[in-house]
Length: 95
Image (cartoon, rainbow, N blue to C red):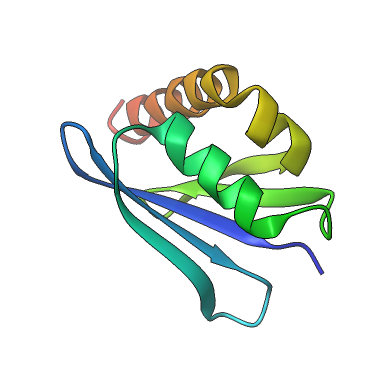
């Protein structure tokens, strides 16, 4: 079972992060984080070493599956990639 991480934007520098483990309920939540990168690091810390990969969604759009260790140690790079993929998907929806 692969866990899920949901990141939602609440303001310019206000994000919430939720972690679930496959049964549809969120097992961990953290509100008021300053960036997507902080959300990724926080979610990775919550997941620990028990899980290798997690599916990441941003604003209810599934972006992809990422190694938990990469989410933790290269959070800024993953956050940039998530934002790029999200922008591309939104552009295709409105094209």
